Length: 68
Image (cartoon, rainbow, N blue to C red; front, side):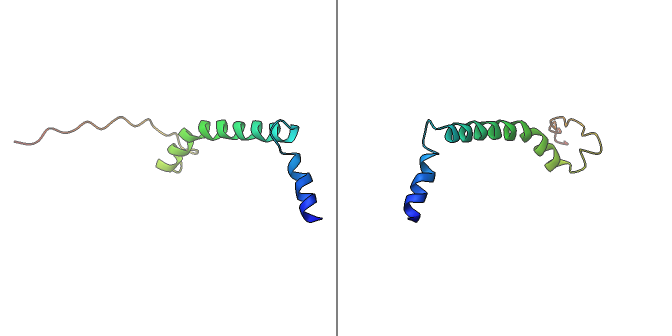
């Protein structure tokens, strides 16, 4: 009985079904949102108060010339 119920439930998530298509679309949207958030999360990781205070763009450090 439980196996039949599980089988019936899983049929709703087979490729091509409405539930499956919605799940795939939702996962693709989630992936897109997470990719868009990556720069924000990186900034917050480097400067945790960046949401309150403006985060200045960091310039690439230039190597100093050795003293002679």
